Each structure stands twice: as structure tokens, then as C-alpha cells.
Amino acid sequence: MADFSHLVIGAGVVGLSVAARLARGRGPVLLVERHSAIGTETSSRNSEVIHAGLYYPPDSLKTKLCIKGKKMLYKVCEEVGIPYRNCGKWIVAQTEAEKEYLESMQEKARQLEIPCEFVPLSRAKDIEPAVAARKAILSSPTTGIISSHSLMTYLLGKFEASGGDLALNTAVSGIEFDSSRGLYTVQLNTGDGERGRETLQLKFENVVNSAGLSAPLVSNMLLPRERHVTPYYAKGSYFSYASSQPKTQRLIYPCPADNAGLGTHLTLDLGGRLRFGPNIQWVSSPDDLTPEGSQLEEVYAEVTRYLPQIDKASLLPDYSGIRPKITGPDHEGFTDFAIRKEEGFPGFVNLLGIESPGLTSSLAIGEMVYDFQNS
Image (cartoon, rainbow, N blue to C red; front, side, top):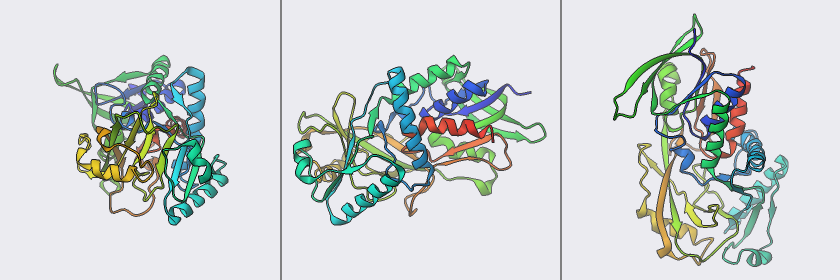
């Protein structure tokens, strides 16, 4: 009675990973994306960092999936030639309190068997002359960078080679579950607006909600009101750097201050060019993607704490991304990924709040959702 075994909603890097894994063993799979191309939201507007797994509680999904996903990513990059660089990262402390935080981070890394060590400040100037750290530097040698677009292109190829179907310009506008038949009826609005739009109704045995910024809205179409989720949008602007000096060979991160983000950090692209970001600004719309040039002074002040020789005139607003959060600015404490089978809706899997380290975790998330089908 079903048109497809699985529907995967959202063709960002996580949705592509899930769809590719399901198509390899659980097909036939339809992957729908409301935009005209894959990965145009969070997946293409981030730092493109392969994270080590240092920042989150040891038993959290973010930690477990990040560590597993990191190993899977490096393996795939080596095997199929996805551009990447295992450049490493320094996290710098400017105060005693920040140094103590890094010491606790190192202990957690030791327990999780993540390579991590302090760099003597006496040696740091020889290694990275431009970097300033008053109290401590924690080195993460398994951190790296990756071409997220190349990764998504690879995953799409795997998905289609396994018989999966991709539908672009296709948005979900309604979901109903028929418990007597165990089928989901999904209303899909197709077309790009220029050639008119068409509404289709297709039936699926299983639905995976990997819609990123829209995932709470999709979830709310199906679940009862008492289980609705409120979306929050944390905008981060990135700044490019037009000067050739100063230079670094690795990523430089400040000691994190809260649970909203990892601070305005220095990242590199695969060509070695510096960029800085993201900062954080809570916004009301996921479409607010204009980089905030008005925040340049604030960004400059944060960056000069660890890179004092930077030229402010060479900092230029570049692009912005939105973190798909399910807790708002007033929330205190850590918020984990929400990846779960929904009670009362067999075959429906929700992926909510998949922010950083979502890119690093993407392949591991695909395996996790696949394993749900066997449990």
C-alpha cells in the first residue's frame, strides 16, 4: 500500500547521510528537499570543522556521535578522496578560570580516549608566533577541516547509486498517520513557483524528519500539541580576512564561555585562508542570513584576545548561518541532540536541534537511524 518504504525530509548533510544509509539496506527511499539544491541551509553555512568531541558531557549524543562520526569521516575522506585537512586545533586560556576549564576538558578527553595535550607556553611562540595565550593552550590534534560540499556530493551519489530518489523544490505541508494500516500519508508541495506548484499525497511506511531549521515545524504537523517543539534560531556571522598576515597553521579557539556556541574562533579553509566566526545573535527568522557588519567591532575585540596583530581593516563580513536550536537564549545548561523514535508513531524518527557537531556526526547519525529500524 505504500509508495515508498521511507521518506527522509531534508537534504542537508545529515539527511543525505541518513538517506544514503537507508537506501543501502532499507529502500526504496524518497528524499525531499524544499530548496532547489541540496545542503543550502546549515550544511553550507558553517565552519566545516571536523570536531574531536571535547566540548559536551561524556554520555551525551553529541559526544558519542561526534567521536564515532569523526573516525568515519576521516576514513571516508581517505578512501574516496573528499578534500580535508587534519590541521589540529588550539584552545587558548587567558585567565586562571579558563585554564581550569581547559584542565577539566583535558581530563574528560583522557577518559574518552581523545588525544589532547597542553602546549608549554614557552614553546607556543615558536610554533604559532602570532597566537597569544596568557595562561594555557590545549592542543586537539584530531580536529580538522573538510569540504562539506564535496561530502554532500559524495553522499548524494551513494544514495542515488543505491536506488534512492531525490525530489528538490518539494516541501512537506502535512503528515497524517493511519494506525490501522501503519502508513503515513504525507502532503508534498512541489515546483519552484515559476512553473506553478502541484500538491501530491504519497504513502510511506517510515518517515525520518531531518529538516534542520524546519524540523520542529514538521514534527508539530504530526505530534499532538502537548508534544510540540518551539524552534529557536541562533544566527552566527562569519568574517573573512583579506590580509596575508598574521598566519596560523591550525584552528584557534577561545575557551568557551557558555552553551550557546564555542566562541568567535579562527578557522581555515582548505586553501589556508583565515576566517573568523561565528558570533551569536538570536533572531526570529531562519531566513535572516545577512552577515552583521555592525558587529565587526565586537568580533575584532574577541579575536584580538588571541590574535593581537590582526588588521581590523582586513576583516570583512562574509556570510551567516543559523543554528537550529530547540532551546532559547534564556535556557541554562547543555542541550543535546534530540534523535528519537516517537511513541505512538511507529516508523517516525525525529532529528531535532542538530547543530554543531552535526557535520562531524553526520555519518554516525545515519548509522543510528538505520539501527532504529532493527529495534
